[in-house]
Amino acid sequence: VQLQASGGGLVQAGGSLRLSCAASGRTFSSYVMGWFRQAPGKEREFVAGISRNGDSTSYLDSLLGRFTIARVNAKNTVYLQMNSLKPEDTAVYYCAASAEVKKGYAYWGQGTLVTVSS
Image 1 (cartoon, rainbow, N blue to C red):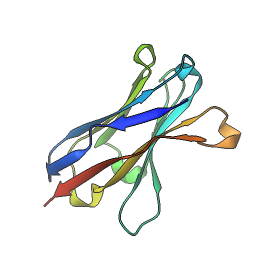
Image 2: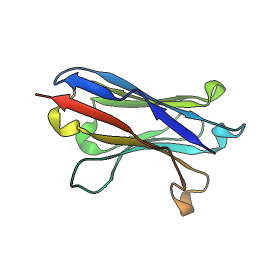
Image 3: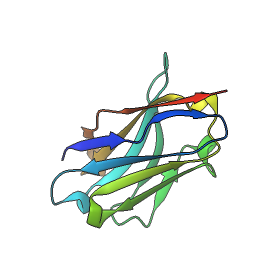
Image 4: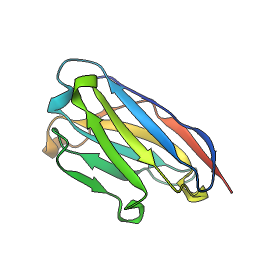
């Protein structure tokens, strides 16, 4: 599967952005999908994940209530709605796909930059 993330940009603190990740192929619904981020000088961290049919989600604890992950399998797309953004949310955001839980996220998009100004 190939992944293309989009929707990043510059936003003021307190604002919102919605990231999208479009996947190629016909088997999108067979992948667990996730969003990760990497801030300058920091390691990449898990942001959110969603099950194959969208009925289960998980989040980095500190983002609960501000970020929402969703997917539309008919559109081969996963979204990350980000509200009440903070300067510390500034990072490159990556979407990723996992075909087998034991093997982790094996497929990655190119990343989209989110910059939150204070």
